[in-house]
Length: 303
Ligand SMILES: [Zn+2]
Image 1: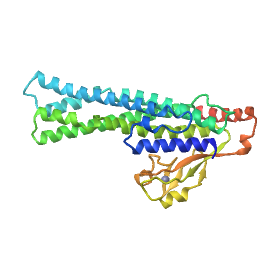
Image 2: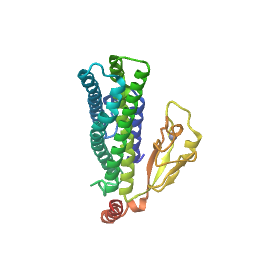
Image 3: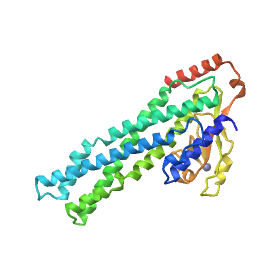
Image 4: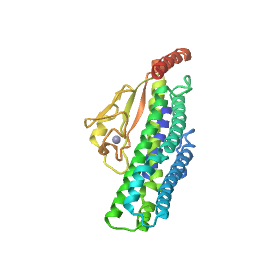
């Protein structure tokens, strides 16, 4: 097996384990030199998210307590209005989470791209991420942050509406906020572990684009433990297309296996991977010739 295949296989196995298992990531260190730091980086990101979620929960609990303490005849209905008009608008979670996520993605994408490019062709080492990828990091971090914040606000509103309908007390409503799963550690963990798949996919893209010898990407079928292989995924084995193109599975488009663009039936328990299509003739060109090709691609990606 080539070095890049070994790296991608090891990375994919690690991500699959991270997504499936309850285990501490420190116990599932990937067996490829250079990937050892990944579990610690993911756990740091998970801790940062957990901290932001706790801070966000505290803002809502404090808001409720302050609201009630000013006037003990306050109702939950009035608090809900206050929440919608004032507290939600002042919520800083999205901004802070967006910053943490951009930092995490930049760090992991850079590390992985560097390792992938080294494994494909030592003559063309990684230098800088393209503007296309740094722009993508900013926009995805901000989109994900907004989605997460909206999800929390909607869940909170739903709890309060429920409490009002049930005629619950302020203390009971407070308990609902304390127990809301949107603020708990599992959400931080699931988010961090999902985003390493996102980072890995973008690193595949970046390294394949920047490596002159890579002329395309190839789908490789690999069964997951839990399910029988899907005939449609087995049929994808060996399908090679340009790096910017989409794979079509059951009429659905996606840039890589488990792309969020695919529906759940194609994502869940899929262990497939993509690998580079390497042109041996380009690989044999001089270092200078390959560098010139890389610069041309980078100019296009930075334009
Ligand atoms: Zn699959």
